[in-house]
Length: 313
Image (cartoon, rainbow, N blue to C red; front, side, top):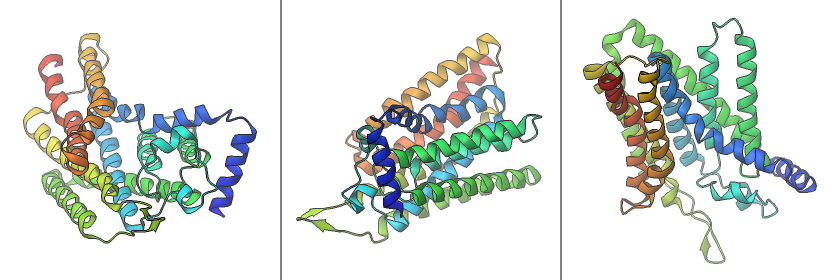
């Protein structure tokens, strides 16, 4: 049924002359591109706790996604059925195993986390509805573009919501037991290390067609390395920021906000340029992804808050 559904969407896509394809492609790219700036902006400029909550939800969702992908090792739809022809722009960025959807598990913790943070707002029902539509659009775009099955995005959304729930429980526990935060951060580092051990030593399917391997399992572990690096960067950055910095969000006063805005530009460079450069260097795929994930989280949690503390506050 999943393949038939994708074929139906593919036929509709072709029948309409790919009218919606550019929009779906851009929305899909937004969910793993500019959207990651939202938690950083909130953390630096608006509310430190709210930003940390969104970042933790995102990090937990990413490591869950890596574990599930490497556990089920589900092939992409076009590998399972040659009739599936994904949109050209989408297939270039659809790497790794298929189940569950990485895009969905990147967007949902942010959109869903924002809904949780806005639950006390008098217009919370409208905000939640809009954010739910945003989650649906991200999931549907992956089906529409032909790079994920319905179960990929449904399960991805479900586990991303579980990640939000886990982050909320951790935050509630730390508020009651602040002296336990370092222990929780250490637990996160250990969990990340165990994830890497699992990624390295579990067995993977190796299938050949006409003498060529369908999916090389070695590069498939790269997302686990990036998620583990992000976990380590988050834990290390949070420990150092809490102990030595304790910055205050800039608010929207021009001079202070300008410092944060410069940081956002640098962070955008990190996630778009430096991120890809690290993956393609002599560090090779695993170390490059690990370093990329670490720098990503460490910059947003600790490094630029140091700059904000020095120059803005």
